[in-house]
Length: 282
Image (tube, rainbow, N blue to C red; front, side, top):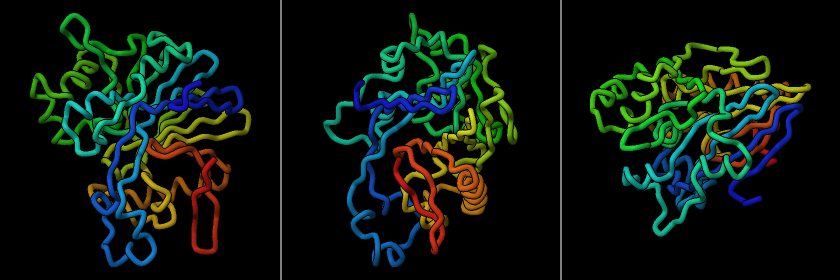
């Protein structure tokens, strides 16, 4: 299969990781770390542009088909984000890659949006005959209530042609958007866990099948450096919330040896060290 997608078996669950396109930025430009702290040990990592895949995760279970995050790379270009590499040709779209794997949009039963940053929800709707409709017509869509109620999101929803209106607004009008508070059992093997910090309503998805655990982390981490230094994070994140969410995840993941899937990193696991915790790529 193409190198922009990968499948992992987890008990009875089949996990497919789909990269819809790479984003590029320097850690020095987006993280809250003073130069005096990163330069002595991490100058190379912080100063050069790094590539970060924008990954969506499909979870196939008996009787259910779950999608975690739904991005549309074309929107990154449309929004003129500085994170799009010059001259870059992205992989096929999310829907095209799902179809390559034999997963039709109508098969999806649940779509969990980890948080309301554009690259995680921009593919939840598609344009058809001049109108936007849910991209996965038989699914329910799950968003953290605190993200939905964020004043910036609510203001954007008042603008008819905004990204928020043509995605989240369409889902709300269609009656398929559900607002999540706290931890929620989505299915017997799938649980949504509150993990605020990156955004007020940021959430992660835990899958447990036949004694094996996997967690889709959204943007709880962007780079392995943040695992070694949990107080290092994106400049827009809430420090106290993020630290608490990371600590909760670390303890649970180490206890279960969980496989972790951050949205912008390859899969891996955590390992306890004398200094704290480090990332081991799977």
